[in-house]
Length: 431
Ligand code: SF4
Ligand code: SF4
Image 1 (cartoon, protein in one colour):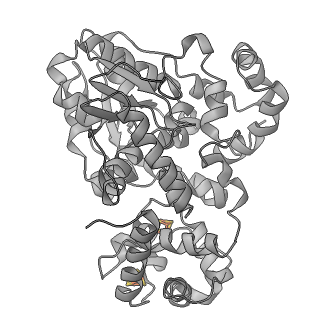
Image 2 (cartoon, rainbow, N blue to C red; image 1 turned 90 degrees about the vertical axis):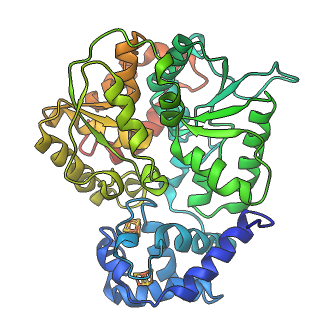
Image 3 (tube, rainbow, N blue to C red; image 1 turned 120 degrees about the vertical axis):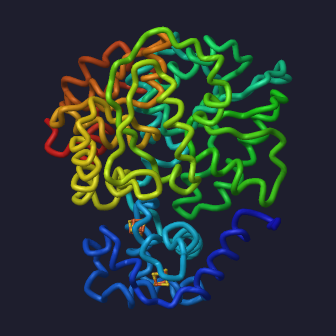
């Protein structure tokens, strides 16, 4: 079904949600964050009723705000608990967030770290600590009248926070002989982050701008490192506009072309894969597993919770309720430890950023799935992000990253000002 725009799509979904929801409260009873909110005292039934009232045109209440903006937008335990088969965190809370934003209520303070085109969002400042302009192999925007390319690889925003994975992906695509160009996130954005926080008009403008930027190269295929961008380009943007290329998640694209990947080195590791919330929404569980099994030497073992039941990395939770983020992040780490795996492979850049700071306390490495492929192909890069978060010490990071910062458009003062907020969320107790 076509909609006139992103707002009318979520408006429709929100109304549908409010009509079908029985306000039984089972979703919030299952939610790990709800007991920490300021509205836990009114109970799950009354709290969800405030949200459904809002979706039916009622008050933009403080209670609805607390429920909607405390949600981590992905762990999905609410949806698994819902007897009506609803997806509260997505098709209920996004339209509710849009109504709250429409009523002029400001977002929680730390959410700026996720917002596209914000100077201090985490993708911008983290990549400034890890990539010098001379290493950059991506364009911020297409040049005027660009030459055509068979494939456009879009990095997304969050993966710029762990840029070694992008350089590794590009190294693998080079080794396969793919004719591709790379567009970076940051300035370009699929609109997912804005969508999750309810800024639907801005999200639509961003999504359409990204589609035009990719289409400028007249590609047959667009490949997305981040499944959030893929969800937007296959599931959301086509509902109200044309997307004139075929969209692939990186694991799907690599699997379809696996016979072109020149694996060389044996990577003798027992690996367990953490599925992300986006992959749970998409149901794309097989491609990353089959890819990892194609790497010579890699053996896979599953965590107790895997695929659609995978445990959340705690990602967005640490913007609003950092006090629960660490226990949430530890639950999948305990499960990974119980498998005896030597590597916990991450699919999503956000999950990697959640788990890597805890790695030192566990007997396994946290690595992006792409790094295992890159090691075998011989195009592996250093994970500088992990180096910094393991230091977890502002003077140490400033010293380690000095050359990168001086080559960036950030001043050392700016980085020193932003880092504490970031480390507070990911490395509690940092120095
Ligand atoms: S997605 Fe997770 S945090 Fe958000 S409402 Fe559902 S259970 Fe709670
Ligand atoms: S569990 Fe489902 S039906 Fe019950 S309140 Fe939550 S969303 Fe509504």
